[in-house]
Length: 497
Image 1 (cartoon, rainbow, N blue to C red):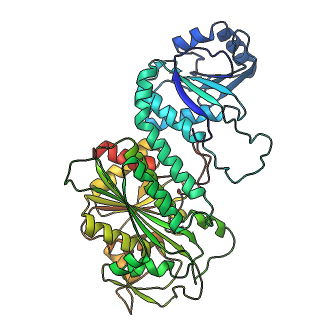
Image 2 (image 1 turned 135 degrees about the vertical axis):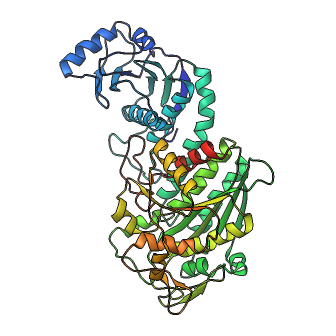
Image 3 (image 1 turned 45 degrees about the horizontal axis):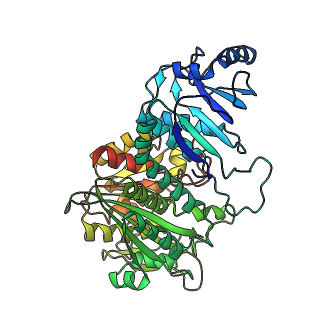
């Protein structure tokens, strides 16, 4: 697991030591196998519940140290409320909540995955395991000292007690790569920018070769030859050269059009000559969260051997303000041949996406394209941090993304596109300008990107509010959220395999 905890599956039985976690409904009822495992300790729970006024309400916890009648050193009873139809996102939350209750220094813990209405089926147990794995994640590789309570046991062992261990292991084998993909995306977002610059990001993405992913890395010379003036203009002020990484997973029928996922990868964004305020600029190491998601998604698809052809493409740049940096007033020519007047060098992500999207669209002729980008502060003003903004030229694709968001909890909200907004990005000197001003900032950014899409079904996800520094959840306590990996994996699994 992400903090070196080992996750395994076993029978529904009381452990010989460590922490035991069980679930009770709002009538303090356990599943039959759980009650049997508790033995006389079930009566202890009833007495303790009365003393603590614990009713089993969803989200409540009863913690009993050194429970009589059990060899476990600690018994934790988690309330699940009324029985009902639990969706995958609810099960992941359950796993995350359980993992969050395990003390960091615990040597071992057992979680009995049986609710009052009965044991969970293998597919459901895999969702719980996914939530538990994601909750266990921490990014502390650069800490040389830890405060009390921050210690992690390198040998910690978490056992999920299930009715069908073999079935659970099989179900987990297809969900574990998704969890690993989210962890990979989180790691990338959390890395400091002096470590994760474009060439290093490309190197880490190239590690997917071991899963059978074909990797192409284009350097500045190759991109200049292709005419990617929009992308290259963003990175020309940095000592770190830009890169374009294309990842190809061929798990579907030969000749079938691939699905394409494109990520903005600004490894650090100062704003360039239109420099950002100093306050919180350190957060701009996360301006590559869209690219991180695409890498994590490709890991997930390859790891579970998805029966689909998929392209993952990421444009990797640094936006820095040196003497060679792009200026407001410059005009660049994109790979598509369209010219762009630079009004604000801090509107750089759309320039990167313009060339990558055109490249993928013309070279691979995908079935659809989805791009992800921490693109605008305007989307946070509009939606806060609970939804990503979605813009699309295709109702079917948009509806499927909304559905996948509801299933996974990575929710999207559809925003408008309309020709009337185009006048805001029309330029006096070029085909377009790279920002339309204050009003409708997220919309005009999407309108800009749409000019490079053509007729291919496409969706743009503005994840500025969800890709990093987003609200914590039951299975995410990380600054870098890995948002989008589960959403897009669900989209693929439900509709395209």
